[in-house]
Image (tube, rainbow, N blue to C red; front, side, top):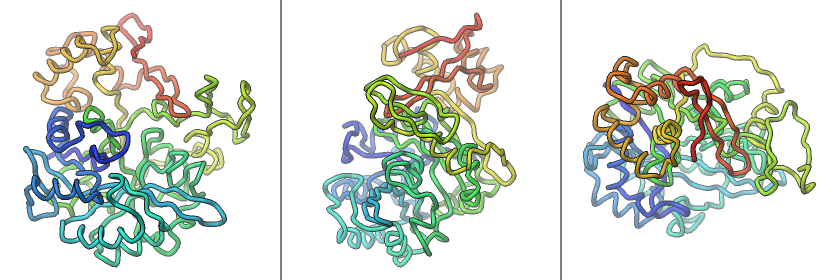
Length: 403
């Protein structure tokens, strides 16, 4: 049986998050998207944990259930610490198999920061300390560095990150077995950096609103427990089929640039330049950082790697075809119709056969989805907090636009 797993998202207890990020809306949108296993998010926040305890049904295998969707206790923390004379801010994803272990973990973490302030709490401790604590509580608590290339909060981010994973976790590095790509990179980019070849690349949505669930995710099969999920990730075994990825150029930190000055580009070498408009340092993007750590080599390596597929969210595709904003009633009406006949967004984008798309959908929308699958697209890069755009070739051979 196929499972679509999205481990990283946030509840309404996190800053800058939709008020609709409650269990009811999460489960509703998981069904629309085609997700079968969803992270609960924010497992350190006491009020949210209390809601989870009352509403989730324990399946006695490390998974929980609500309104037909399976959940896993999973959340993000923000570590702040000084190392090598530099202030570090690193985000980590942590998964726990039971409320019993979660209670012990949160009691310990509360010594390092106020867990009630934010669903993604700030903890004043190092990466090495965090791993030592989680592993001392249970070897079934798993930690995955989150969106590892994000400039300000990624493990390898240009603003506060490290050049080597061992520089962050030291002797505890051996307990890390997976890294999260984030929206502005994909597995191919990550595997250009030879030093991180040994880790499994996973992808999650980091959704702050229900509609963004599964914009990135992991596709597995024969998963029956919490342990199965992490065994499949750790061992890169046949149960881990592929990851679902944003086109990294659409991510809002892909290229170098300055949002205020409307300056953006993809660098051709590691040279750092000042903004030609204001003269201040640019925000150096994920591509720049990846290529710097790779030595600007583009050696492709696929052996032993989990495959991946790029997607464009279905509403963006519809908006491009009908030439209307993706938040308009017209786009939503078509979106809901497609879900009614194909079952879910990911069925439309990935799993349905081409013949089915052309027999059941408007021809132009079917063509757009097929062109996306073929990656017959034009890429306009994201930079300095501005999302990019991925444009699909139309029937006339032109690339459309959407808002």
